[in-house]
Amino acid sequence: MRNYLHLIILNCILIQPVLATEYPEISVEQLKSAITKGEVAVIDVNGKKSFQQGHIPTAIDYSSSYKDLASLLPADKSVLVVAYCGGPSCRAYLKGATSAAALGYKNIRHLSAGISGWKKAGLKLAKP
Image (cartoon, rainbow, N blue to C red; front, side, top):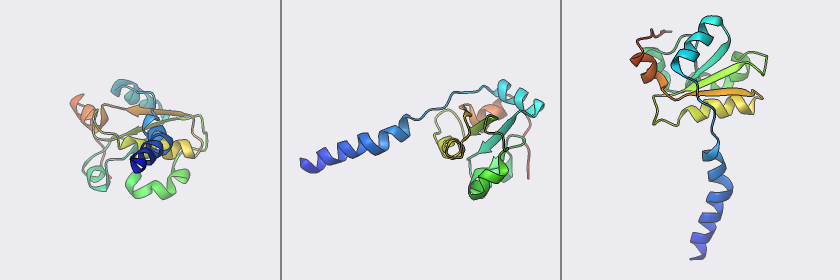
């Protein structure tokens, strides 16, 4: 019983705050507009293989670049940063979003539609 209590406390202290971290959503159309205007940094967390098959234009491949993220993102910490993964049920975007937050970026959004929503909207993918 005591071990279970420790697990519950550990969950409340360490795990729940991480899971509770949410970032405001951005729509596919809003992201498309921001890309067109050159007003956004985009982080793809779908993995290298997926990135090579096609990604949202201007996106950074997080899996290949997370160690260099600070040098790949704009110097202006107020710039819009959007992280995305596969789609609405995917939570992998948190890796990119929390990495950007740890670097001091303040305007971070989540494309909950993900790459699947981008494709569904009929928008073109970029390839490396």
